[in-house]
Each structure stands twice: as C-alpha cells, then as structure tokens.
Length: 169
Ligand SMILES: Cc1cc2nc3c(=O)[nH]c(=O)nc-3n(C[C@H](O)[C@H](O)[C@H](O)COP(=O)(O)O)c2cc1C
Image (cartoon, rainbow, N blue to C red):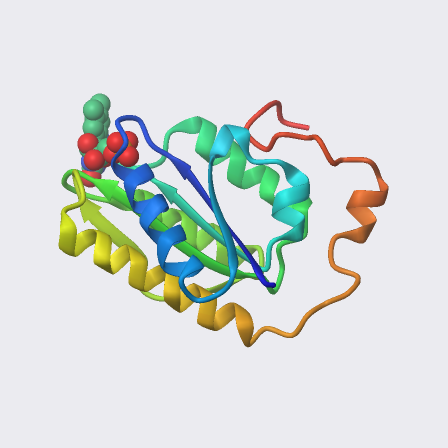
C-alpha cells in the first residue's frame, strides 16, 4: 500500500488540525497515511514514504527556524521524485507553505499545486479542503511507479532512528 506521511509544525493546533484532516482524506483512498509532528518524524519513515506533505504556520513572514532546519535535512532522505504537498495555517501573509513548496521543488519532488492555506483555525469547509488535498495526494501517489531500491542506501547506512527535527547532522 502506498505510504503518505504528513509532517507539521503547529504552535496552537491550527496546522495540526489541517494535517489530521489531510490524513483522514488520504486514508479514505486506501493509502497508509499518518501525521507526525516535525520533531518526531523519523528518517526511515520519510525514506519509506511515497508522498510527503509538510505543513507549517507562518511567523514573521516565514517559517520558524526549526522547520527551516528540518527542510534542510530533508535532502538526506533522497526525496527526489516523491509526491509533495505544502500547507499551513496563517494570520495575514502566509509565506510558510509557499516556501515549503519551493524547497520541495528544489529537492526534485513532484509538488501538488496550489499550496493549501487556512487563515487561523480551520473551520468545517477548510477541513473539507484538507481532506480533498489528502485524497488528491493519494490519487497522485498511486500513479507514481514503485521504486524497489528507494532509500535502501541510507537505510543500509544505519540512519533508521534519526529524528529529522533534531540536530543538524
Ligand atoms: C508572534 C507571531 C507572529 C506571527 N507572524 C505571522 C506572519 O508573519 N504572517 C502570518 O500570516 N501569520 C503570522 N502569525 C499568525 C499565525 O501564523 C497563526 O496564528 C496560525 O494560525 C498559527 O497556526 P498554528 O497553531 O498551526 O501554529 C503570527 C503569529 C504570532 C503569534
């Protein structure tokens, strides 16, 4: 079954609510989907994922530094050709999801357009949009051919328990 991981940074639960709804939508389309806080995300889970959705709220017109660091580390998971999606709650400018999508593209991911942004706390309609995004990710991931060798090099190198939000190595 294709795997979807939804990784989020959320200070007061708004982006987390989006992440949970994305998982709900994806799960309804027969993919193995889960949401994890960015500082709990394990390298092995990221390597094993066929699609990675990343969400962050916006602070001072960008992401919070720990999320920027997480994205820098993503390079080590060899995410090229994986499906990507960016989302996040915001208040007035909402740059974070756009910056996430930019980084995903730089890393060679197939990013769904447009990014999904919700102002402050998601309401019922917003959560429906999030579920829709989850379904879209599931559909897209099923069209990506399986790669039997994906990630094996890193796994062999013993990076299984590395948490992406920790350290910079
Ligand atoms: C100190 C502070 C700075 C913020 N800066 C921005 C900003 O620059 N642009 C913006 O769109 N929202 C900004 N926000 C609003 C948050 O992005 C918004 O409250 C969001 O819903 C938080 O979501 P979360 O609970 O997932 O972290 C800021 C909020 C705080 C508390």
